[in-house]
Image 1 (cartoon, rainbow, N blue to C red):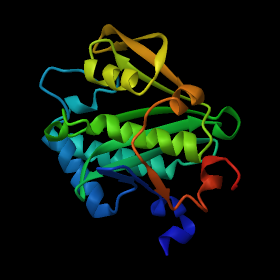
Image 2 (image 1 turned 180 degrees about the horizontal axis):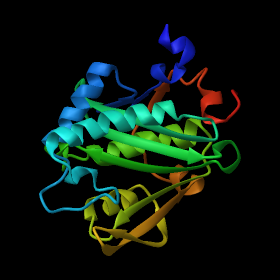
Image 3 (image 1 turned 135 degrees about the vertical axis):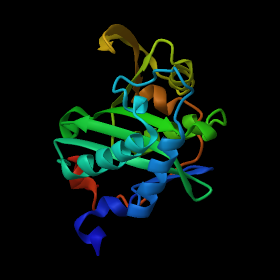
Length: 216
């Protein structure tokens, strides 16, 4: 079985309304279709990598290629887990978590996107909260970081709601212009102090070496 060689395929993170996991090939095609239908309103610029500026077909292809690329380049010293988010059994977006030298640093960075049709329902907050449970409760994370453009109010609101604290700014160039991002950091102590939705994790056994950590 594939899970004998790639146990990450059996990993499941479940919250009250959502399931986060790696997709089958058909489900990957479905989440690519979600991206093709739209991730934000026209004119918005929520990502430093402007992949959502691509035409719908290319946008969908980018989702597929990025997913494969991250699996193919996986190493315990540098990894990105692209968890597809399922609501009522159908893919609605992606919650990613990445780390470098996680076995030593125990720090993760996250990013996400959600299909436009599924926004404004609290699902973005719930999917990040589910990812944070995986990171802190199961993988032993010490701190989690995130960054959002200053005008990406929904992403900033999620960070603040989940207990992140301001961690400075970053200045980058997008489309030939300087853009500023607000950085946020969530410590293990602040995460533990938050009221959180119930989350369960299954299938982590056998995945520990992929994350660069030892099995309990």
